[in-house]
Image 1 (cartoon, helix red, strand yellow):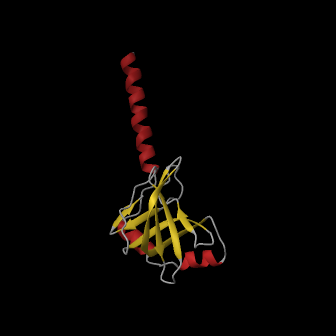
Image 2 (cartoon, rainbow, N blue to C red):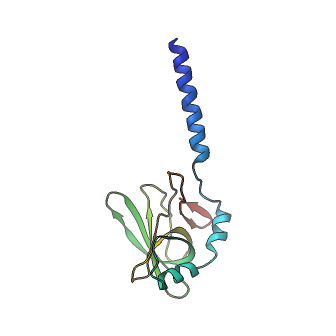
Image 3 (cartoon, helix red, strand yellow):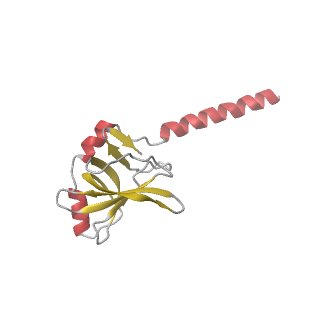
Length: 147
């Protein structure tokens, strides 16, 4: 009898795991991310001009400055990108949930995340996958997607 109960529990775990893994959003392929980020900074520039926050954006910009990680309840990788029009944007990548992107100054980086307006040009956060199944973000660096 115990063997049957163990078999049923094990089968339930396997089925539940398979359903979870199939429903979990995955990062886009590097090619898809490159196509999405090739838009430059147009959306961010409009959102900045209109003081909009909480909108999902995708951009492609040059890494201008690397900042020290920010520690708090979660750990965040931080770097600043510069758009072609000169606007700078702080990228806040949660490495407690997502993956650190090995960005370096001068390189082009693609980013998808949620834009938050501020007078300095704004910031983009939520650049990682979303475990709850909703929309998530990513960082594209040298042909690899970090989420």
